[in-house]
Image 1 (cartoon, rainbow, N blue to C red):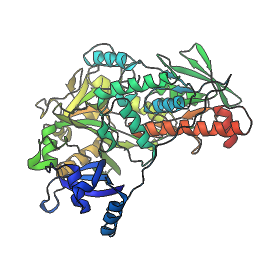
Image 2: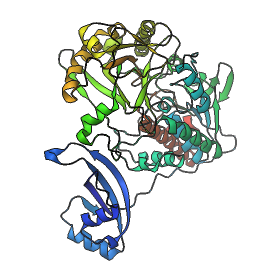
Image 3: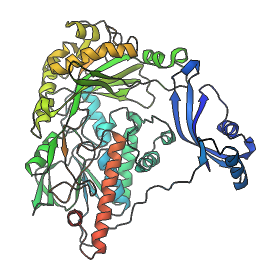
Image 4: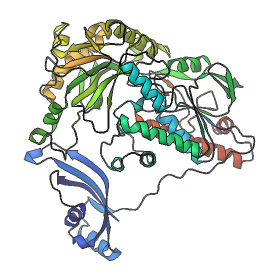
Length: 555
């Protein structure tokens, strides 16, 4: 099999891939047995007048070894054509539970917990999953009711419940990591109903509408393989014996004996952070970012990216990524979680606090583009205490709640008013999409001064990169505070076990080791594989298998 890389094709060239590959390899179409798209990206740079192109990575199977050898010899100096060996997916070792052995527990059923549970279930470990929120159907109904002006549920919302916070997002499957387990996660998503294009798109996404079905199907697969998933089951305490995990307390009353628990709690489980800190787990404060959501017509972003080709159905809706380094404040501002064709949504996880996030369906067809504009804050801003970042988030979320009218309406301000120090304009370029509603206000009143100063410097710079981005009538909605976890649960790099507390495996974004659906899923999978390997190692040595004991022996 040959791999073609950096293969640029004008986006409006409708030729079959077999014909394109044959031309690129300088051989006959009849020589091509099969073509697989490994990667597909859009190049809209229009360098020296070049058209918008799709840039492919293709795996090409030729009809026989003789033809392959001939093509390779002809293109031996072509660095973008090479022999490619088929790579096998990750193998999950079979480690069935022994008689009398405690099954591993997974706390939280977001991406990290979901893939930890799926990996453990595939190994025959029959994991028990404890999710504080509700199943995705109940959760969706509760969240829609809240967005429509109904009661807020602190245990069933955008942050808590089956699928985690990523279920109400754009469903991006991009990641900065290059881990081989990414392929395994994508294949699991496809098996659960995701479109096959996520295998090869440069910027794959699923969308919240498809994610609701996908996470449900992964749950069914965990159960089919012997696992158990319980909703409305919050771990409120842990029991330690000799510094090692001995049991979990659920909902303040039920005791579950456990010597291995994977904590995929998400970045908003503030009460769980506090409980674990009180139990002596090694934790540290970490930087995160806060800011606002900005909205533009999607057509405007498409034109900025594609020019006269904007709106062509062969092109995906456009996105953007912006960064700015402010030399006056010493801080950076950047766009985050850009949602083409999406909505700004209410994402609170605590009563009387207001948080926003962005969300898109798979089709990305709302006609409105939104993104967070964030500024990093550090322990120097909020204090060195491990939980000081949480107190910092709560302070500004409470201010935003007050500013919006104490009914979960969000404060909104035009860019023009924000830069001029005014409030009250309601002539928006695009109607703010946040529900249950918005109130004109001054966003300076619910954000730190260093953050608003940096945003004020960044907006004109962003407008130079995308002319019109900082137009006076563009709306900004506050506030976004959940870009990442405000603290980190420290763990051993190799075993994934919490420092000083054998048996506890902190995983995913909530533990401070991931930043999105894919990296969290990979983190949960790798932690489960480390547990299985550690367990096997101790078992082969003749001792009893247990997550805590096995890792302690290797640390």
